[in-house]
Image (cartoon, rainbow, N blue to C red):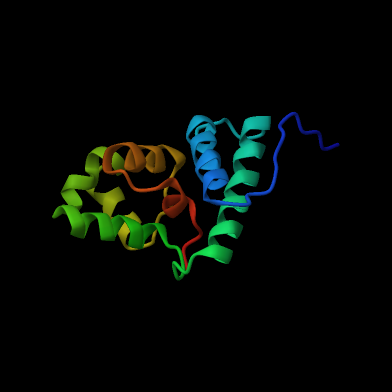
Length: 124
């Protein structure tokens, strides 16, 4: 049985989109199989649909977002260890052999200001 205790509405403009991002920051680390995790998943889908319709970002890819930030800030793979983990794990992520965990996504967002929407997107 599917129940919702949240009032989810369409994203109609950039102001709505920013409100969704603020809410996602609040519930991002919700434990799976909870109403907050369900809300997070629905809001990510809504945000992606809005962005795909209104912005031409090209294919979203978490690894490319990380590499872009590394290039912008002159970071090396070693600089990512506080956010991702030991060097082997950093290498696996950058070489697409390991997906980002929610902890890694939160750390990369908080530490390097990489948008959640970039880190949560499906890699292409």
